[in-house]
Image (tube, rainbow, N blue to C red; front, side, top):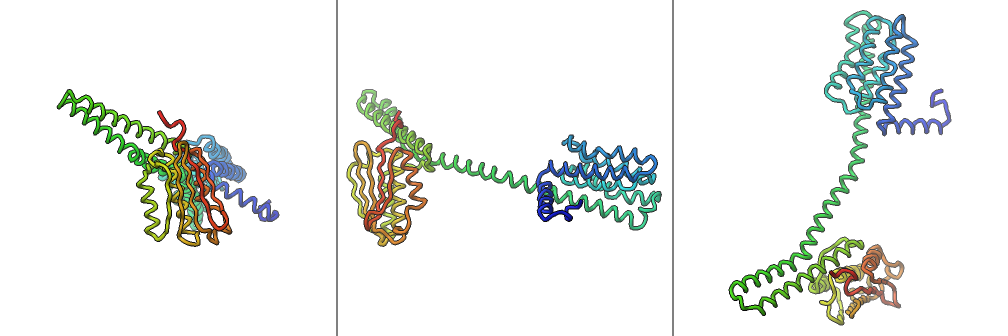
Length: 389
């Protein structure tokens, strides 16, 4: 029964199945094999005299193509075309061109090679060969043109389906290429950050070592000066390795940056907001030089996100920062006047990201409203556990 004689749900299911056939090469090939087999049976029914031999010979062509996935297109077309020509020339078959049309669509949809293309052209022109032989009255006049048009439609349909398959495969490859490009960009960024992180320390170490060599070469008795230079080189080397380990641990915990941050960069960050018109009061208790690389990076991020939120949401562009550096940790508190938007909503995605980054290095983070003030608090370790050599 035709699909349009069924219920609307059955029609929709039929259309959906047809769409799936055109989105998967294997399903398309199987569907073509089923159609070709049905047309082959029809050809067998309408064959005359010994035409059934030709019909039986053509019958399994598309089925073999399903099993033999690497079957050349020219071989498939030859398999169905030559029996068709023989049958039409001897007037013993009547519907074999329908099988050829299906085979043309399959070959056109499956990346045809040059020889495949030549055979497709031969198939398209084959009705005119029967016309020239003048052995079949039906092919005279419009008959040859009608079959040529039918074959051309089959070839065009296969070409369109092949283009669709190529686009689908390209869409499948696109996420992989984007991922590879993102990974390459990440590798380049990590290389730059590692260079910035350890390049300065080890350059100074090399200068100290070169100085020791030159000092010993010029004055072999200058033992104390050489020992002092070696101690400085050792201290710088240990510091550089310690910063490298901490930054790598920070990145392993979810950070996207290894860029080193020093006290000068924290001051530069505050100057940026002050230059934009923000009034910032800061109180630092303790020596910030004692804070190691990874907690200093997170501290920089906490200050930047908190001050950005002040600029966006606060009632006035004023903030108070208190930083306390103790023996075991760093405490930072940023306060500002509570704005109307902050009263209605809690922290945004930026604060959630800060919470994750602070927790990644073993710290605690909290952002809350305290009466008419918005308070951001974080407690960070002074150095990462297990980062030392």
